[in-house]
Every structure is written in structure tokens, then in C-alpha cells.
Length: 211
Image (cartoon, rainbow, N blue to C red; front, top):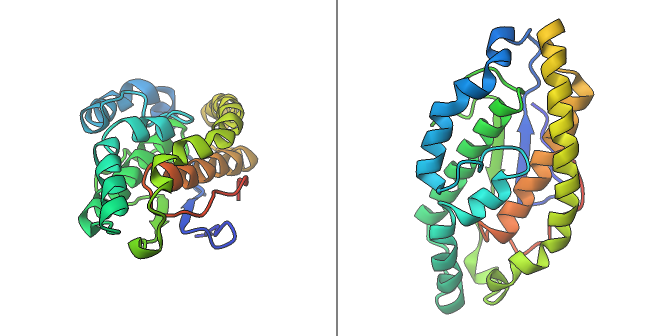
């Protein structure tokens, strides 16, 4: 398993490349097969598109995690604390949403687990709340606007790559490695932005990098 540190950024993300042939029937029927897990995601986050590539950043920020984002921001402001159980919930939710996103983009043909990491490896450092800024949590969404603009373009390119990969899998059973690496990089970038502006686990500005 290859991990990308992003220059030591406190979130690492990688997806195991499937060396085996992927299931063509599952690939063909991926969207209807995903409906049950997407319904569960809607119940958790309040947004049905939160797991799709390019959307799950904003789905997380506006859905289930948002219920904890503002209390965490207030806690950091007045108490300089980030309760461990809030952190654990946010981390496991973002892991779950990523497994769904990886499934939807055809990078894994195993149905997303609610517990096991499967092919998705996301590690998030528990923050030292005493070192986090008191005021940044209230403006990080604004500071991250440059990332939003770049990610919109990347998400569109990633969606096109997923369509090409869908055709490739149907004909060959394989996910083209360059497309896989590119989409993986988009998710990595996306998750770093989430850690910064939604999960509030770091004050370090996310790098503009797919690696």
C-alpha cells in the first residue's frame, strides 16, 4: 500500500489499485446497486449527493459533520478542546463516505462496508487543540475558496475519467492505471480540504497537489 504524505500533511489517503479483474456486471449496474447505501448516506448527512466525486466535500460540510463543526468551533474558541469522540465520529464518517465514493467511481467493486476500511486508507491525526487557532474555524470556509475553484475543474475531469474507466472495465475488466491515479489524487486533495475547513483538525493550509 502506497501512502502519500503531501509533505507531512496531517491527513493521508490512498486507495489500493485492483490488480484483479473487476466485476463487469457490477460495473454495468453500479448506480442502481448503490441506491441502498446512498439512502443510508442521506440519513447520515442530509444530502443524497455527498458521496459522489466532487460533491462529497460540500456534502460533508453541510450534512452530518456540520452538526458537529459549529460546536467544535465554539469549543475551540472558548475551551481550546476538540473532544475525542467528536473526532472519532468525524473520521469514521469521512472514511465511510470515501468508501462509497470509491465504489461509485468504480475503483473497487466490493460493496462499501460501514466498518471495514476495504481498499480505502484514510488516516487523520488527532489534533492538539491547544495549538489550534481560536478564530480560524470561523473563516476557513472562506480561506478555502481557491481550492473550491480548482476542485470544480478537477471534479469535472474526474467524472469524465470515471466514464472512460467504466467503458474500459466493461471491455477489459481493468481500470486504466493513469485514470485510477488521477481520480485517487482528486480524492486526496478533496479530503485535505475537508480536514482543514470542515473537520477543523488542522490549521495547516492544504497543498494544491494531487499527491
